[in-house]
Length: 211
Length: 193
Image 1 (spheres, rainbow over the protein chains, first blue to last red):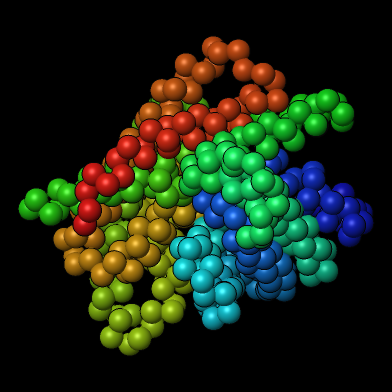
Image 2 (image 1 turned 180 degrees about the horizontal axis):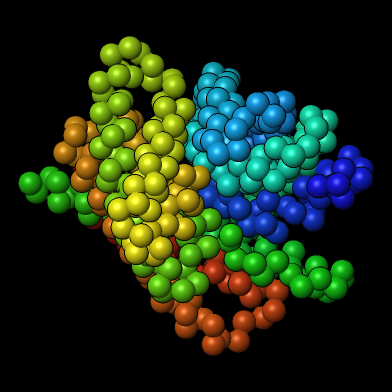
């Protein structure tokens, strides 16, 4: 990872938001992108929870990385992540109860997010604390950006509203407000970002499916 | 008996994990490119779900509830599943290398899968008894298998279709899943437990 260490901290953050955006480019942790994005507020709260867990898990795994034997590292990482998920879960339940009732199961399931474990394995276990912190920051922000974008589109088109306030006075497209509208929103946005990438940056689009 | 059958139908069709609860999408998108991997994955999943439902039910009912440790359920379930999958991996490699060669790669993916974890969490929340938990695990596994097989057969056909370039791969798969999910809404209200 000597190449990664030369990358500036700003580069790490930008990589999380654009280059390796967890949802649109790497296509991991897709469940919450579909399930909890029907309103902007729940989408953003979920983003904040993931952001918190990603940053804290990256920091703590980077601190203890030399103490963990290579053979048991995956269970150890999962337990560390699980600890932070429990913290986030209890905090959300305490302070944002109405929203928590809807997204609770998905917050608990952050522990099984491939993106958090993969950053722990690919980055935090090989780097010092400070770069790991910025990598977590970038990935967390990238995830928040993706969820924010999806829920923005869905609430605007599905309800004609943003954060619960009416902004557009036309007939909403009910399809986007329905639970399965998330699939359409994610598919269309993903295609849109691929189109930008192909059209303006000469990329190949993120055609890699899943893993 | 009828109640248990209803539970299977409810878990597999009405509350299908992929199409109505939107879980396990990473694996769903990852393994449905080929029918063969989809079949292997669905078998492994169903087996792991039933077994983990049983083990986690025992742990939750006899250890965590009496000592009021419910708030630790995420950690405990994850630890149990990770330990169980790891040992299944080791045992399979020793006892039946042929089966391990076929299904081993899926086992590794299972630890970080949200459906596998969602089953014990749902069971703990709904206070099912032991038999109900087993049946719920089985129904969820069958539902996931159904989802994988539907999607794999469509995507094999999709290989030949002329999809616009930005939508090739995942985006079109998402839109397809949305259409199937729309069809699965038809099952809602079929059974009210």
